[in-house]
Amino acid sequence: MKILAIETSCDETAIAFVECSGGLRAPYVRVLSNLVASQVAVHAPWGGVVPMLAKREHIKNLPEVFGNLNISRLKVNLLAVTVGPGLEPALWAGIEFAKNLQKKLTTNNKRQTTKLLGVNHLEGHLYSFLLSPKLTNLSTYKLKNLFPAVALIVSGGHTILLRVDSLTKWKKLGETRDDAVGEAFDKVARILGLPYPGGPEIEKFAANGNPDAIPFPRPMLHSKDYDFSFSGLKTAVLYYTREKGQKIKEKGARADVAASFQAAAIDVLAAKTERAVREIGARSILLSGGVAANAALRHRLSVVSRRLSVTFIVPPIHFNTDNATMIAVAAYLTHLRKKRYPLRANGTLGI
Ligand code: KG4
Ligand code: ZN
Image (tube, protein in one colour):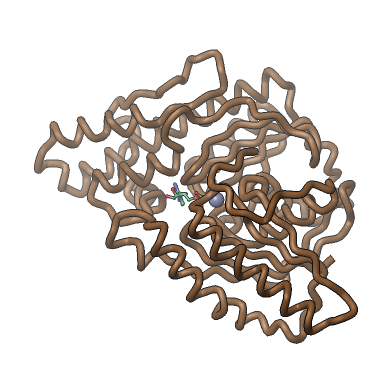
């Protein structure tokens, strides 16, 4: 099944053309084209994503990105578009484009209407583990051996821990009660005067800092549930930097703050994931979302996995941050599950 997927939930205009096969027992993904037009430069002066600017840029970028695909030679079996969660004006840009495209594809091929499917962005992140190189050869790697799994989705809008029993069944264990961890990275970067998006900047600075330099709090580390909270950690960084005054401008001082903040956030994520794996008796950890691009987090969870003798799966970095290939994969699974989402922007759609 050839799937054309469109993703515009935040500040990346992404279109992918992907071939999926194998069904629910052994899904196989072949990426034919994965295109992303980033809006970082447009939002950077504002220090964060401005929803109406994002919408304007998506409307401008979508035809350009689509033009690069050379659609006349492509045969699309399924058209897919993210319907939520995300910024509603941005989501609408993708949905309207997809609806028009559906009409065009149908006019081009009168005998067949191309189906248009709404996709949940969080399911995109969840299913992105199928894009890991470890899973490309399913004959040597039995999918069912991964379940039950513990999935950690860490992005700019979400921090969610799930118990995953199969490709069609999962249960939320916990989530953040305030800021998402990616949001905390972005806000701490801003406090330190680093540009947007902050996550990669914090990671770069942290590489030259001492993670033990400042004992920032580990919020909810010992709480009995699987919830998270990152707003207190962000505030602790704010107070610390205020106290330091001008001294914080020194490169070494900022590196220490970045490293100590990153260590605190990763400690909590890793500890809760580890406890979930132990309690469930999980056989794998599935890490996804933009913050999963962070090498220190990937490393920590790979160490945890080895210690617990479970499989660690994380997609390549370009499939962690927002992309349309993961939306195509989720569309394939949505189609197989016979699940339908209304073709309306839903900013707060859950998983
Ligand atoms: O999944 P994503 O691209 O968009 C959302 O669905 O939110 O995640 C974006 C988030 C941003 O907060 C960004 O700062 C963070 O992921 N991020 C990182 C890194 N790369 C992106 N955070 C920490 N380290 C990184 N290397
Ligand atoms: Zn995302």
